[in-house]
Image (cartoon, rainbow, N blue to C red; front, side, top):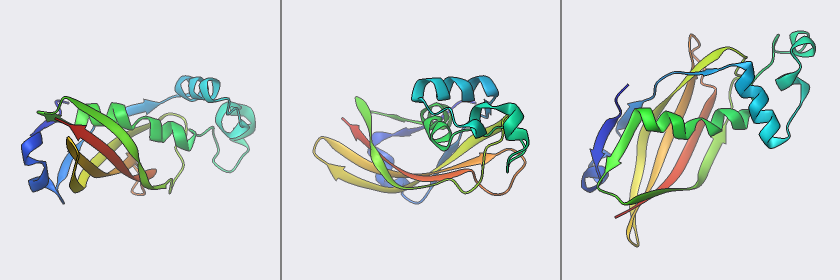
Length: 151
């Protein structure tokens, strides 16, 4: 999908509006295992398919922070901001994982601009990201991301 493009100078006008929806991303066992390897989080619900089949979710599930870590890839296919020289992650206001992500799920993000406040050299954005699992109504992640864009 081609991301929607927004000019830096028009961001304030977009507060309250949708910025875009990302492409789907497959969360397979290889991705879950790679995340476990990088983070050292080898809990059985993530990496032991046999034991996880008997567990509460019926299969392995993605780490919550793996789901969160997919946001940059999702943003890249959902929207971009032209006219700034640099963007940085600044933090998170709120984060929830309302539903699990079973292995084999496809996820995508929906983004909405909640705030655009001036800072020295640029703006601070508050962007609501809602990550959905294909075929399910309940989101798997809802987060308010803080991003700074500089001229």
